[in-house]
Length: 234
Ligand code: C5P
Image (tube, rainbow, N blue to C red; front, side, top):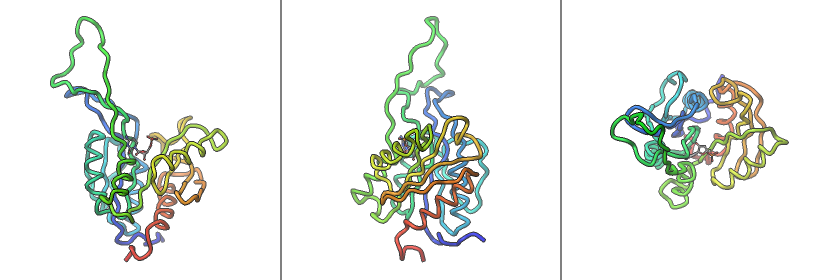
């Protein structure tokens, strides 16, 4: 039986990839399937959490039952939804693959081929949503007790510096828990299986077995449940 240990916990989870418009018909995007974030939403809901899923573009991750879903396109839309909803969340999980850059201008009409061949695409930097949530919490716009979870996709293995990169990213982003995914060689993006480590701000490091995103989700939620302050869970 599933533990019912997240009963009443308000959770906001982002999933999928953002799309950054170039013109009315084109965008810059990524291969995120959304499966890990959707698996988290499903598992959290089954464990009693009240879940809102802020979803970018996905490829058929399946609709989780009893979860509120908000669809967004761009990183800035996702930031706006996450920031508003984080203000009354106990747990915020950034599982989305957010585009780091967006086209500087969105053309009002479809860009034509033209006679001079291709023209360059100019990019601006998108906001770091996760770092912004941590900053909002530090400034009191999000409750101090809200648990903030980030993801990191790193190539390589434990000896190849994945853990070191993960530790550095955990410090840099300032979140409470970082899920480090070992990627490359067909792992993680778009696949069913995932592997990696869970790193907490207070120095706990747990290896994740290679397995399904559902299994990953349940391990991640075990760690989240341990981080939710006592007394918050009814
Ligand atoms: O720095 P990096 O992109 O590896 O960090 C990944 C983590 O940061 C993920 O949790 C992702 O959802 C989040 N992120 C974000 N905003 C961005 C880029 C990444 O919130 N612009």
